[in-house]
Length: 158
Length: 158
Length: 80
Length: 80
Image (cartoon, rainbow over all chains, first blue to last red; front, side, top):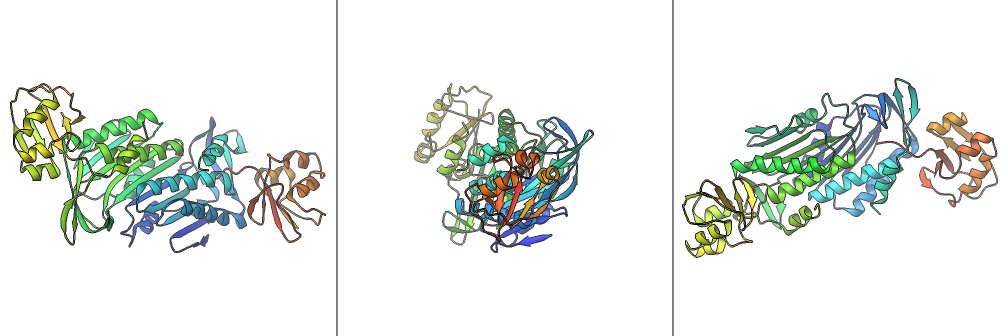
């Protein structure tokens, strides 16, 4: 597990281990009476993707680049919105059905900033952070294809 | 505490007691391998509102109407987006600094639906659900004034 | 007809529930009727200042009323 | 110059790291140079098919290259 603090309020991790939403939420809230809004996103391994039944998936990444890419995305988000704390965790390795893949948690004074930044970070992560999914199905395994809809979502933030 | 299930996948509660994010998240996820995205919003009592230092607040509501109003808002959200499970909890009574006020949690197949519905429910709740906040400050207490920005946010969904 | 008041309205008018049987057909008429009760009622029940619900659903001035309805007046909501 | 390949590209080209010293000044030139290695390289390194990063930052064909750079080629990303 590798951790990087881009500033006191940011936490970015790329790791094999699972994460705990309650612990992440506690870190967003504790001794933080100035933020009235906390938004979290959790991405999980779902059973069906593009019509195929998934049994598990394997996440590969480019270790030297992943944290740097995530850090840049968080930095971008901070330039756009007034944010309190930001926590991003992305898992790599083999993940079973329903396992947690990714977490983005944001605290902010106001909810609009927290919602926008959380969705922005996910949209950018999906198109700019060097992770690749290989899905295992009953009929063998295959690399997941990038979705045009993810490109479009990311472009809407321009 | 009053609970209402508008359908198997909805949970709506208006209550004095605190809630636990981890428990809510577990209920959004358990035996739910079809949803790949979970978005949660938590609203907390912040120390500063419209320039005044807050020590606590009291939430009054219209008991016969609150759950009905929340149910209608969730129903609206379900008509707009493809959602899995929806959980909404709003507390009433006296709340100290940093206490949790409101929770909205959504699971969905895709993250776009979960983000949009979660923010929509909060924006509508802020303008349509009969809750009123009275803030206690060092200089006495006062009713919170409705914000024009909340009206504008709700109107943007039309 | 039962009329309820909440939050600041309840405090200012010093009234949480009123049972009235006025000859009114719409929310606008009930509002006007209640506004005759005094200066504070006149001011605080004004449209735009007080929201209203009929049978626990947000209503507007043209909403029809009948005897058994529960009507509520309250300030713009501030939950969440 | 170190060149890395990830995911499907690594598998198809059967290559995860390459150390090369070509006479190239831009990413476009490196791409063209590597595409000469064979049909699969030609196909899978095509612009639009493979993304590239120079020193761990997303790059485009006009990005300048120097000897000490770390270059990576990979398919469009699919994390999250």
